[in-house]
Amino acid sequence: MSAPKVSILIPAYHERFFADALESALLQDYPSFEVVVCDDSSGDAIEREVRGAEDPRLRYARNPERRGFEGNFTECLRQARGELVKFLNDDDRLHRDCVARLAAAFDGHAHLRLATSRRQVIDAEGKPRADIAATQPVAYVPCVTPGHELGNLVLVNGLNLIGEPTTVMFRRADVSTNAPIFTWGGKSYHCLADLSLWLRLLAKGTAYYDSAPLSQYRVHEGQEQRTGAVDCITERLDLVKEARGAGFLATDAQYTSALERVDALAKIWSARPGVPDEDRATLSELCASIATQMPAMET
Image (cartoon, rainbow, N blue to C red; front, top):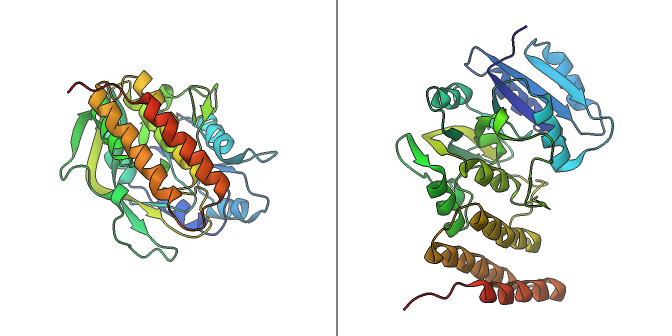
């Protein structure tokens, strides 16, 4: 069999919403794709769901031992055969035309490194929820934008406006499988794992944004990431500094704005009731570090 054009990759671990995610992948209105499931769970429910689908486009691999968050995403990428890659978190869903619309964006655009779209927030029952700050539209019509401009918009505002792993498509050849997928500059990112990858891609070329919501991001208890936690704020500072070295935030004004955003988030979190003294101390040190990194601005 010839290789499919697109690989939809599901790094599976949680059983609760997996069937919903898998169904949305197999219902894609696109002629050439595969669905690869890398199973990092301890039970057999995910495997039974895959076997029961009996779909020739579906491939299943059980990890012989737990690989964890980054390891399972990396293994999925290694298993992919398609030219284009589309991750799908095991608790999210794709709209039927998601793959078709994003894949079409790459046709004739050699410099395109990332295709994304608006996404819709849903709850545990799959019901729509109001937009959060990060899911507000970047544009109201489909468009192509320089990668550094989109990256700067994200960094200065301190918001992942690009999307979660489920939202984005990219070329498999643009991401090496010789190293963990969310490691940048020797640091492994967790809270901002997706952004660490998107910025690496954006540094190489342009991005496509589709103004239609092509995926659904499920918000529920028990999610892997802990938005707003101290380690997430620390990662944000590391990401800003790494991005600056990669050509983002080229002006002192942009870099200062991004640092000020991290500083503000750290102070907001530190002021919350019940924050442990150890975390307050960590955030205080982080703010002091930011103050020493501020460029000297001309008056």
